[in-house]
Length: 407
Image 1: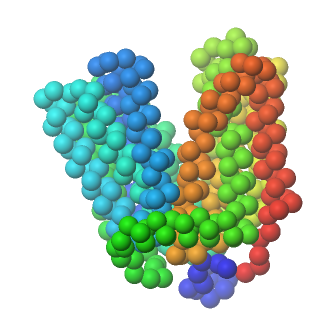
Image 2: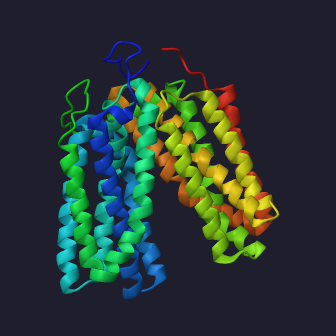
């Protein structure tokens, strides 16, 4: 069943970029993403200066552990308490922690401070991420989900692009304290925009005892297991991410090193990916819907592009391949996410969003480690071929197993 019935007569649904409430929400979240990038740059730089690059990596890993470990439980909490209030609470907590960290950093910055802030942010993300996945479809109608996801993707990519250089400038000017103050301000902007939105709700969420929380988690996993569309979509997402993350992270460095292209080669390939990703997201901002054909084609083309990165003889072929990978990555993720949102019942949005997020974020360290191990044992080109095969498997599943019911 679809998650809700349209509130406008058929044929009158407009694109998501014409919805002021949704645009305010996206703008607030983009500012928050920008603040996150500022924080990550400040954290890494400060950790390296206080200790070593290895310590910086460990602190970044520390922030991801509570997020991944508690993400599924966070999805159940979202469905029981409501996404908007939890997003606001999470942002307020992180704003207060950022302000406190700025004060402590002025007096005596240390590794312990970075670890504490990283842990708190990781815990907050375990609730915030599924809440964000649950609130967006409650601000739009079914035919707006694809264009809405395109707008959100475009805004997030812009924030990611600007945030890291801005973080470098802020750290150079005012160090960790200034970066923390700016991060706190971005959380405040997010809270202000969230206060202006009123997501649709099918029922009033309210606190439940712990045993009901665990029961809600089990019910959500059972709902996913039984749903004929969602379980296939999540499998496609998992395979596509497994095939994509390793080559586009560890893999580019391996290829550039083996071909003698150096750091400039990595930069050129990443630039190609960025250009393709922006074009793909722009194309999806006007999409009214997305379905199986788009997902299947994007996964197949992306699989071929991944293989070409390593197999192509020259840098320009690798850059063209990463551009194609970027061009298809956005539409593929947008189509999958919009279909997941369309076919998820409002009662289970937080739990489904948590599993979907885990299928994306959780595979990153696994895929990167697998790419490094495979390239070391069987060679770079065969390792890329295996990754491309996973993408082709995702495309085949779209064609053979994914059945989208009519409205």
